[in-house]
Image (tube, rainbow, N blue to C red; front, side):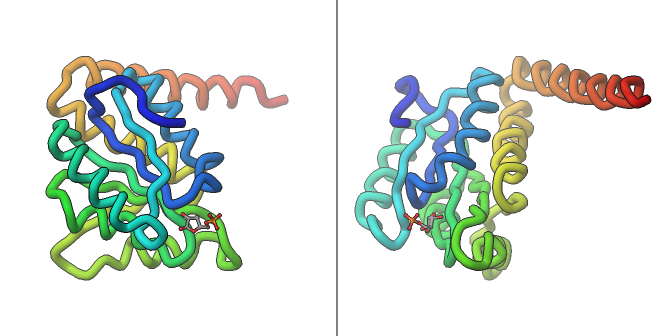
Length: 167
Ligand code: RP5
């Protein structure tokens, strides 16, 4: 984990190192698309001051969007969104006894005014968070638009190929 490159386009934040097993899926897709990123473990509850300091640093360095992943009573996405006007994509982590339902509701039920674009729970949500950000950035970066079209094409071909493999 840690920083990757000096000018991050996307900041990936997670509430605990225990979220990494899920969030590495998002980071791996950002890498595949060649999107610069910065990954940190920072908690809205456990390290509130450091989280704010980090957001301030990212804002000054021209970050384009945030992915905020957290489990249980997940406030990370909302707190990040409160300190930026950049898009914040939330990933509810399936930790704790409620397996992510708690985190999903915490993120998706933001009161009006400060949105967090909430993905599905766990690994599928982590993957979609990266793809969703690539969609947003594709408006600004034509090379990402091209890569996303190729990604979708390859995905469709894989699905069509799977039908042919059936007995
Ligand atoms: C949340 O609490 C984290 O995002 C994590 O999903 C959950 C449990 O954290 P640990 O006790 O594993 O550090 O803040």
